[in-house]
Image (cartoon, chains in turn green, purple):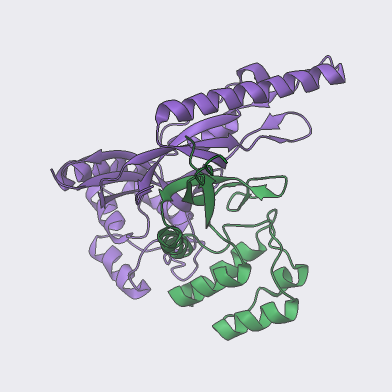
Length: 148
Length: 242
């Protein structure tokens, strides 16, 4: 009976999703192929928990520095009723026409105009909350095999 | 020997027809043994970037640009001998104001304004532990746009990670050869006189320094798949023991 092969080693790679210019100047959309978004590797970890910690830190930083209208072309998660309630719970007037479409535009500036109107009084917490409602993710952790 | 160093990174700004837009992430440029050396290089690059960027065109102003409350920022400008825009409360008015006015100010006045714009930074220096590196083999994101194949944006899909650069490059080269063979076989199967073409300019643009003077874009002369990279090696740090 032959000895069992050693389990292949894996690393946990934090990677940053890739974005490409959309139809209007201020917006970017996902760089995707076959519904899979391209991503650039940022750092590798031996332990998943450490990778997830960095991912969460980078995600929070991204939401802090990128204005919420920057990413478009994705469906909005949830019903119009739930989305409207979520914005109101944040203390923000919802972008009603965008919610009605159920889709963040990548070829017009409706969300850009909406953010320009709310930005003067939006707090950092409200900004983070808008990103949460839009359902955009900037970083992820993937398992990758270590080659011999 | 210290177990930390000072890493200079360029923040992930992209040049757009409207100006510049910041996305998450950064590109590591160099590491230094001292903060002073890192800061010196950082400031050289930062000042060069400021020459080409309208800071008020990157988002609603002045909230995306400064942490100062608006009245404080107004006073800051006035103290520097600068009249704020007439439409002070219009977030979209500032970009035009800068475009029209900044060129009339002295260098000291422009520096004074930039000093207040703490949210518009193009580079960063951070002290980080010195870590070993590994080499990720990445499958690039080529897509067909009804005319030719385009690979825009950074990254792709990580297939393997190696501790040896040599092994990573061997995997990369083998994977590129296989991909080109598949393209070659598919092309022959279709008996097509027009081979598929690949536009590499978009990826080059995404990875280039956005603050450098844009090079005149070369005319598209599609690369044939025999010359195209479908995989590449990206070096990244490793935390923890494998």
